[in-house]
Amino acid sequence: MIEAYTKYKAYQAGKAVFKIPAPYTSQECAKCGHTHPDNRKSQDLFVCGDCGNTDNADHNASGVVKKRAINLILDTGTVLSDDGVLQLKSDSGRGGNRKTSRAKSSTRSTQRNVKKEELVA
Image (cartoon, rainbow, N blue to C red; front, top):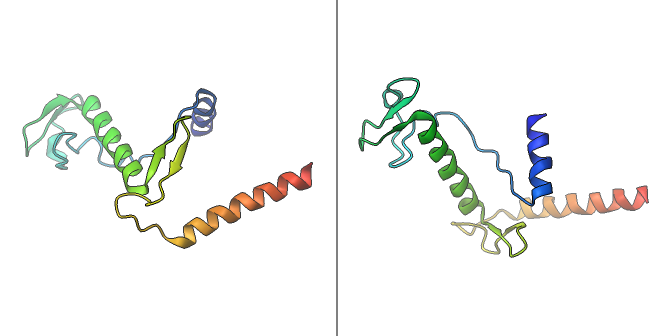
């Protein structure tokens, strides 16, 4: 229910919602990306064993989530249009090699939704 409510409120505010995988965010360094259980010295202290970055553990984890969201946007080729709507870029991200089957299924889904709306109306 939290996810549905978050999406609802984001839609009302014209904002995007991304689902970011949470595993190891508390052990990964937001500065260098080094991941190790020893990076988490205590409940509230994060010290990177590689670069020496020291931060509040929650603040560091939020930075990791932010980096993952940015990478998700860059990897999928998603851009924010002038009116604030997320759209896929034509070259489809860093590699520019989006699978065509994915695009077709997206189109079919849109066509199905339009047909359902026509049937309801």
